[in-house]
Image (cartoon, rainbow, N blue to C red; front, side, top):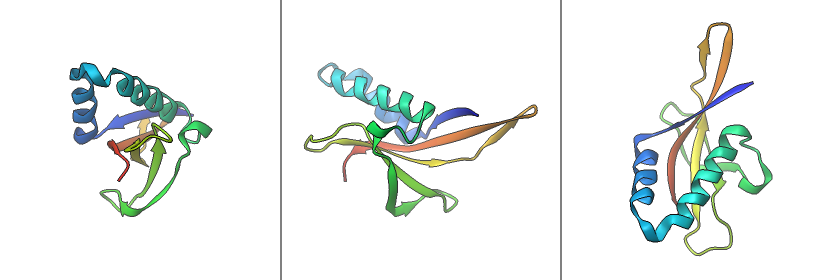
Amino acid sequence: MNRELRLSDFAQDTVRELERSLHREGLLKQVRKALVLLETNPRHPSLQTHKFQSFRGPKGEEVFEAYVQQHTPGAYRIFFYYGPDRIEGKHRIAVVTVLAITPHP
């Protein structure tokens, strides 16, 4: 199945902020690696993906949390939901929408 990763404006702003911050280069690298894993396999073991109970997506979608970092104070997380999928010709593209990339709440 083809998969596509979409970042919300808020998530894009976070990535841009990390790109501008030289002392956060390591974190940017970790975020990018986690986003690649999320796009290719949202259930990759290193992401430790699990359902997040505190809020839902804009249309009531279940929201999931994936780890960018572990065993780090204020470890970064990616919050995402599945959809909305799109059709391209006869092919269905599964979309993963990233709501936020943020330190663990």
